[in-house]
Each structure stands twice: as C-alpha cells, then as structure tokens.
Image (cartoon, rainbow, N blue to C red):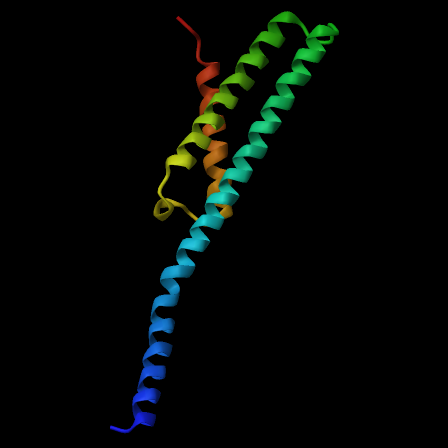
Length: 126
C-alpha cells in the first residue's frame, strides 16, 4: 500500500470515529445544561418563597394581617421552602443520566412538590 493510501485511510478512520463518538460527548453537555436549568428554576422558586416569608413578616409587624392567618401562611411557606431545599439537595446528588430535558417536566416536578406540601400542611394535626 502506498503512503497516500495509508494517509487517506487514516484520515477516513478519524472522520468516522469523530462522527460515531460525537453524540457521546454532546449528551453529557446537554445533561449538564438541563441540570443547570433545573437548579436555576428551583433556586428562583426558593427565592420567591423567602421573599413571601419576608413580606408576611413585614405585614404582620405592621398589623396588616391577623395572627392566625399569619401563622398558617408562614407555616405553608416554610414547608414549601423546605421541600424546595430538599429538591435542590436531590439535584446536587442526582446522576446526570436521570435528568429530563423537558422544561414542562421540570415545572411539573417543582409544582408537584409544592402541592404536596400544601396538601400536607392542610391536613389536621392530631
């Protein structure tokens, strides 16, 4: 075999390897981007929870809200905040392969956790 033939087959082999192996490397970057997007959404929701608690505290301090309503709402927001913190902790531990890239799935997971907290806090305590 000539030197040109060896060089051409080497280049062709490299091109085929790049084409075949490329999805393996781009999948991990897409998973990392999805993880980042989920974390940003959960962080934003947590910041909203903290802001709502601060607003409730301010309203209660200025006597704009009754004591019973203040306690009930504050407990609900604290429960939501703890659930979001657990979600953030789970995201930190979650392997990249188990992450869904669907934005609707991210929103649904956060909303489901919040509704679970709301249903839990609405149950009577014995």
